[in-house]
Image 1: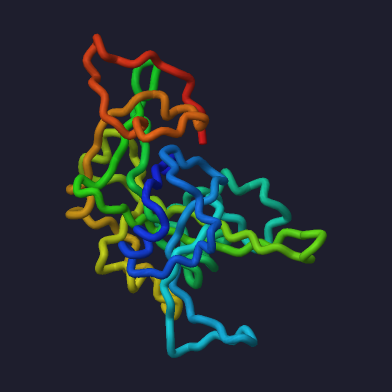
Image 2 (image 1 turned 180 degrees about the horizontal axis):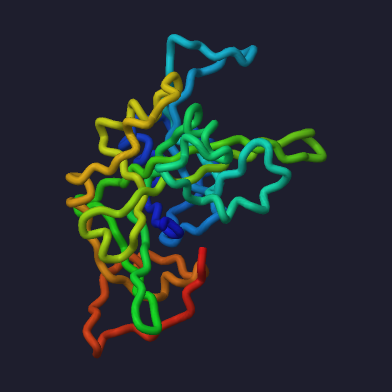
Length: 254
C-alpha cells in the first residue's frame, strides 16, 4: 500500500473542499480512476506567500491546490529514476530516514483521493478492493513533497515537484486486505499537518479509528490490475460468488 488510487474531482471542487485556492494554473490532470506511480497528481499545501523579490511573508499563510508528480525524489538525487520506488513513506520512520526527514519536517501536504485500491492475497490470484468514504467526501491522505531541479536547455533548470503518501499499520477492517494503509487525516488535523512553521508532526502520525471505521471496503474487478484501464467502473463493486468471479489477470506490481 498504497500503489493505486482514484482521484475523480475537478480542482475547483477539491479547492473548495479543502479550503484552498486553485493554483494548478491549467496543468491539473483530469479525473483518474487508476492513479499509478509517477503520474501527475493533485496535492494541498500551505505556505507563506512570497513578494516580488521572493521573500516569504511570515505573518500570512496560504493554502493552495498544486500539481505534483507521485514518487518522491529528494533534492540531492542524481535523476528521477528512483521515483516509482518512493511513492510511499512509512510514518514510523519518516522523521528519521534521510530520504524523507527534511520533507517531513518542512514540506508536508495532503493528497486528496476518492479512495484507494488494495489487493488481498488468495489462491492463485489477488483480489482487488476499493476503499473509500461512504459519504462521497475525499480522503485526506497525509503526504510529503520535495523539489528536484531538472536541467533544461531553455530555462537552465526546471523544478519538478514530487510527493509521497505516508503509510501506517492497517487497523480495523482494513487488516483483512493488507497489513498497511495510508495515513488518513481527519479534518481537525489538516491545519496542524499543513502548518509550514511546525517542524515536528510526530503527534499526527497515528490513525484515527473513527475515520477508518467509516470507510467502505468493496471487491472490484481485476481490470484495475492494468494501468491501461482508466474508467469509472473500476470502482464499482462486484460479486465474489463462484458464478460471478472475474477471470484472473496478471497483477502489475507498482
